[in-house]
Image 1 (cartoon, rainbow, N blue to C red):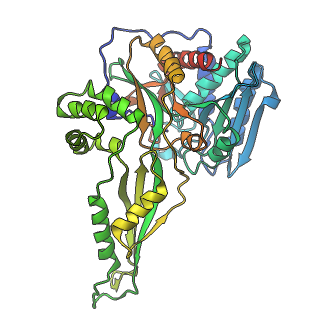
Image 2: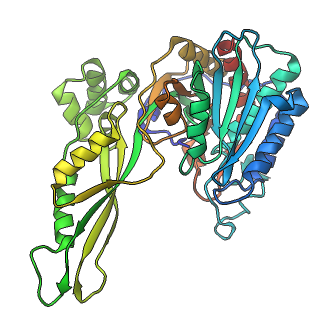
Image 3: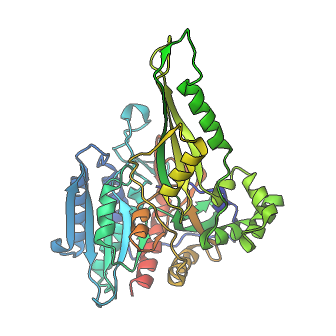
Length: 460
């Protein structure tokens, strides 16, 4: 999950009057909090045995609200499981809307945490535990919302399908299956992307709708040699050859690219970013060929990745003995690929940069090529309405994530996907994937109202 709010989002701060988050009277706060706490107690790490029990618990919540057991499918696979829950609509001719989230969490070692990571604890206005944010907060709020809508007798015009994967944090094998089964959907609402930012004193900054994300790709760069005795150096030492190849890769300037999402995001950010960088962001949004604007943005490490693919060496190994010439040197290079660029072309580019002396191999990283989603007016309108009900006039910013979510597989299958999480957080509360992960209890009511509004508008 990507809940960290980048400079492109934080720069869109606007002056707003004091506000009070509305109460979502339609959805019981206590029930949503209980679902969240119970969810945290399931240790749904890859390699564990809690994915199916957790899915069964969520199924029980929905069945108790009026779902038919036959409308909910749980399938174990690859050491985890996925869940599909269908809320039938009144018009079978309409394509369904899919709600995407994930049940798995990153591993957490109890000895490293202040509190046991799989024992939910309420303290100082927070719920602590692994997955408290990523992604069990939004999964719990969505399940609570769907349960309440069912109890209330709401009838969507089209099917609403909850699709929860079981290995988003690793290889996304369950996501691939879900995307293929549900590729006939109208669109996907990803509750593991997007979201809002708060200042440290709790004022809203802006809200991001995630409509694109960079493809993730890992490559091995390998150089080999017969080796020999270290007392007789040769000019074919793999470590030196690999080092020179990595220098070339570091110096390479990937082509500048843009799409309607990055241009809209940079335009909004530029309006609130002072100095030359702000001016460059606005100039680039208006004219992506503006050479001066491109240089200014690319010279700023906080903004540069928004314009292009990035590839960086992240791991290095080589040699087998201190007194022997190395027979092998290998580097791992991680790339975040701009939407619309194939990973195969990136591999070819790397191979051309480092030369035929270096073997370039794509690793099995669980990622595939994925395009950006179009900025659909109906999605923008529904999200804007929901956000403005809580924070009138708040800036809504289309965003492109630098990492991958389950949306990647749905977009690759031809289904537009949008990160629309209703969770607003301060930077100081962001501990996803880290120690002492926590979610603010005060965010519950706003998140419930957010999802209730969006579903009622988009599932007509």
